[in-house]
Image (tube, rainbow over all chains, first blue to last red; front, side):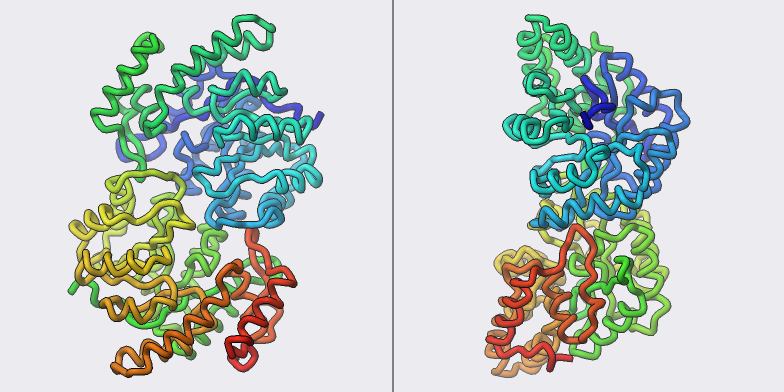
Length: 307
Length: 307
């Protein structure tokens, strides 16, 4: 099974704390990542959408990857976002991840040009993989059509699975479409399709997927972990636990997600520094902050007690 | 009038020739740019969508900007695309353009995150402008919602025109919506709104705009130039000339634009090297190549005679 060696369970798409002048705050970042691993996360997706990766320069991302390499964090639980619009930048970031001892990368498609062909999309990934030239590399494709406008199509996956069965081992499906997740799992046996939201953690596990990589798991990781553990132990509670998790997850619907999570982390930790967010993203408006707090409270989710 | 100092007339969104291994071919690029300026172009938009800018790494773009600075090309006729998803990368490219003696930059919005606020969008541009710290800078905003998913809204323009009236002097409107172009010209007097296609060259000039910045002007610049000249001289032929230009422009509708233009340049110059295109873009399929040639022929546009 070629999908092996990828992390199973709950992965948080980790937030990146920033300094007051909006640079990545590397020490706070490492602390946050350790905190997540201590709170039920089986792994971390670093430098993804939630981590504001695309708002960071290539140089800033390289510095983040270096910091991860030098940290005591367990490398085999880390997955680094390296996909950019430009193949040489993606290659440089991928090389850096490998050099830092991190072999799993979450790769966005080149997302500027729209309406591209399956062949063009697969060729763009292939060029990075060929030039990386490292059989240890594990690529998780990042399917987020609402954000990229460039879906990872079944046609492109087929070409990549044919040519790189041991390297292109999975996909994060942030389409929000459970049907797409289960049909990919069916179409490509052994291919590790992660739910992009913990809302679909249980159904994706039941369909044979490895778990979820989720933004809101920065806050809900303990609850999500309970669902995963219950599934692994064939516990009858799994469905109920998923239902409660889904209810909390839904509180974030309709709010700007990164800002809402940074707001939640501000409450959890009492650290005002969590409010720093890089444009074009903006902090929540006051009314949104109240809405978030009240809705979480209504679901019985106490942010202050979550610390 | 703050929109002064920007180039009026026909600007080609210039193609970037590539080497066989898909790196920017700098000498061929400079030759192509000179050829365009010799064929009726009043200016060039370099490193835009047509120039495959987003497929190039930051380092490759810096090398292109340096090559422009060292070339004999007239700096005041060049406009450089510097907008990326990440403010520090955009800043570095903008600094490089200024250092190369090129003050006009065409700036994409940070285009990864969707559904951002006017305030967030304006703040992202403002951060670059503030940190560039150069009153000579002239920013042309790049509105291409179909490609970016991030429209340059009237609300964001209003904030930027308020704070940077002498710097944020124009916009390239690639929405394909003439109504948007004319309403921006009406809403912001003195703001230089370029049509993103030569199809709307005459109506935009008539509405007080400076001209067009167009992909297909790589091939149609002489015809587009005739329209501009006729308008400037209040020639009665302007409408007829625009109609003929529009008919040729429409041949490219429905074809992948960069590939179709590289195919046209292959025929015009007889140089096979023009076929090189970087993934995720792909060359035209054989049937598309035939379709393009036949449709241009039907419009009386002879590519071989266009050399």
